Amino acid sequence: MSLTTSYATVEDVKAGFRELSEDEETRCEQLLKEAAVLIDAIAADASADAKLVVSCRTVRRALGDGEDAVVPMGATQGSMSAGGYSQSWTISNGASGELYLGRTEKLLLGVGNRIGARSPLEGMVQT
Image (cartoon, rainbow, N blue to C red; front, side, top):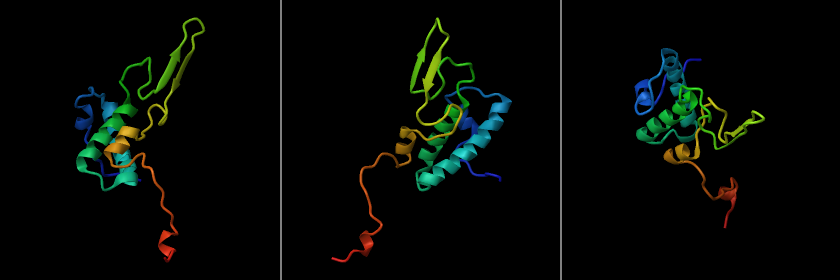
């Protein structure tokens, strides 16, 4: 399967982020295509600007900071211990290195936490 569409470029991802190795640039291109599929699945009609920003944010999170970070990128909770050599991290939206849309990205795309309900039977009821 070949994914051909993306909403951002490798240069967009690098801008304001960090330089990428050649291997990371190749990975980045593929991740941008995958991000486009995620975006289209939930908000195909979102603005081009929103799609670009969301693509960059999700791919940057998946690439990480390029260092052996003490705290994984995207972690929402963490703890460390010294004597027992223990670490614990919670990443609420996905696994480290995985593409996922966070709350802010969903809001940028015009989807997110919405309160309400709709019944599929509403159109069948006659008053």
